[in-house]
Length: 136
Image (cartoon, rainbow, N blue to C red; front, side, top):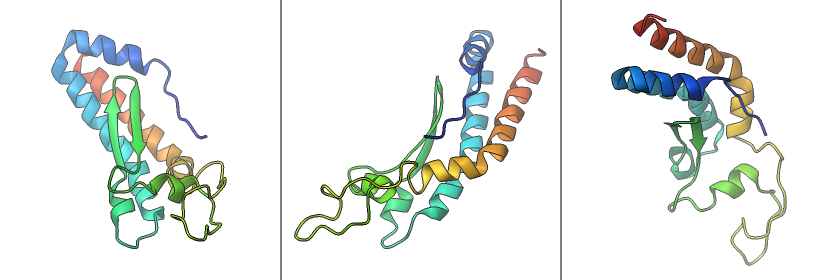
């Protein structure tokens, strides 16, 4: 599993929230834009049949960081598509008991690995801009 950690981000967001809520909202928006770098790459990797799996990929920002997730009620097969095997299962939904697929998945984690440099640059830029706004 590929994870990019930014040490001190939780503390920075807490301090910014205490100083000015509008700055925290701006930082959240900038972090959301940073996740778009990875999200756009991951979406380009998802094969298109109906487009539902590709459009189910979403990104967001929580207090502890940014995330990208795929699948929803309309796309119950997304987990299999990203992490399941390609072995066909006769008489069943293709994702039922299909075995293990690639350990790092096919879409989100490879996209994070490929775009980690631009993603980190965008996060640094977002943090620098937030710090400039509070004159730190």
